[in-house]
Amino acid sequence: MTRAIRIGYEASPQDGSFERMRASWIEAEALGADGVYNDDHFFPVDSDPDGAHFECWTTLAALAEATSRVEIGAMVTCVSYRNPNLLADMARTVDHISGGRLVLGLGSGWFEKDYTEFGYEFGTPITRLHAFRDAIPVIKERMAVGNPPPVRGTIPIMIGGGGEKVMLKLVAQHADIWHGFGTPDEIRHKCGVLDAHCAALGRDPAEIERSVLFEAHDLATADDALFDAYVEAGATYLFYSGTGPDYDLAGLRQLLDWRARRTEASR
Image 1: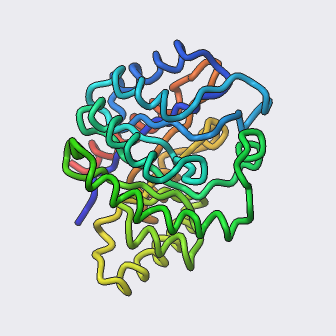
Image 2 (image 1 turned 135 degrees about the vertical axis):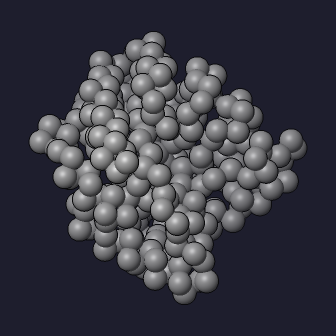
């Protein structure tokens, strides 16, 4: 099937006030974004590590209340930080607050300060990946027995990561959206690996939407041809990442304008 191109906004809860971040959610929805997400860290990762920051899931609950149309989620939740049963119940609750708009973004974690400052064992990439692998069935089982159940019966899952042997196989097994990283050529290659895992498992690869994220510095020299190249590589959900203190949405407008031009040209 041919997927519609979707545009999302990730409001990183760092370096700014809650009020300005919240205003950017509302503005992004009004501009026509399809999704508004945040991220899951305890400290800023792109600036002063001791700068202003807010927690992911409490802000997601606020995001659910502040918006009415857009898909919401975390890009992505670090499973290592939370008991998987508790995380599933948090997701079910926020899904109801949003009226059934939540996507459960999941990842294995990588930012060491998040772990050490909050008393979590950082481990190794392998131990974190294995913990992630083992948590997914627990999360799905808990969501299936919660009362009341998720609004749509189930909550779509986004998995972020690019490991070709294990992570992309987990995407093929469990995800509705894969969030990847890299150039168009790298995304095309990863999509091919993901498609192969789907074939081995008997799953239609078209069932899995593929997304990428652009930060402001990426968009400074970007043009329509670059965005087109990502779509041709397989990514049809393109996100702009904004951060405090300003939460400038110029990058989101750039992506929305490109989509409008592309849509018009196809008529």
